[in-house]
Length: 342
Ligand SMILES: [Zn+2]
Ligand SMILES: [Zn+2]
Figure 1 (cartoon, rainbow, N blue to C red):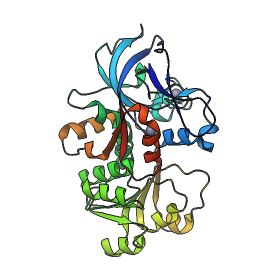
Figure 2: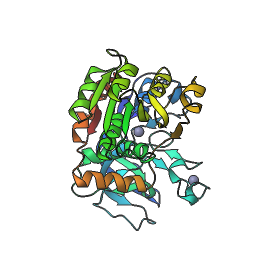
Figure 3: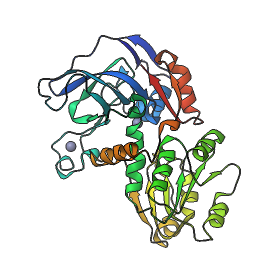
Figure 4: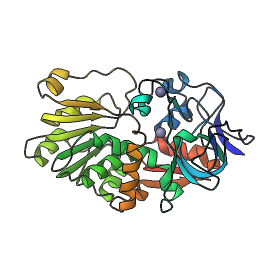
């Protein structure tokens, strides 16, 4: 099968031929139809510190995907050939404290598809059945491949009660835009998106965010004060993972507000806790991944309701052979979701 792998500890990837993988007794073999590029894939492509400290080569990377089940392991009873599935990328161990208390998504022995085990930038992928979400027939494979990142936006906002609130989201990449859409759907009075890319700001405007601020062009704090009558935002969602942004982001928070931290910082950060958290009596939440399967049910319900259309967030599709162009566009942080069609 055609596959995009990482086999050298340098920038880039290798398009190659692999044999179709064998599945274990509790796995599915999935014919991949759509696989989206995630920030993690960019790290792997670049071979930065994040990637080199975690990943054993060679690796078939890519983990946000949807496809058709073509074979099932002998222990699998809940899915069959021909089923359409999307992948939950956090593979839980099933028996630790977290897994046995409804917190599989933060399992202490969690493996991640396309990071700790082979992923899905290939014609076929092995998916542990425990991580398979059966796709509703009305949801396309392309949109299905983005349910995993969409779920992060859903999970992030689920920590708060956005109804009637002023919500600001730092970052207008795909997950930032999903978070803005979910905030709006959840009844936020006003949703503000912030980014530094013209293209991403334009996409956020196009997908319905009330006010979009380009931090290169305006003073974000002043604008937020103007838009919120000097009050500040009730809810701040941080999705940039940029160390320089965190303090500025939380300066826009009103006293007694809520901060949701989702973006991954590349190392320890300096955060003025006294002024941004303690004196404000802010509630701070960390969010990672999606609750299994609570978030997926919610994400599916939102999509089936038709009240959010996530398809415009997919701004580019590529053939897998064109991976260099696709990954370089992704790393430029000027596009929406980029999906390989297989
Ligand atoms: Zn991902
Ligand atoms: Zn576990």
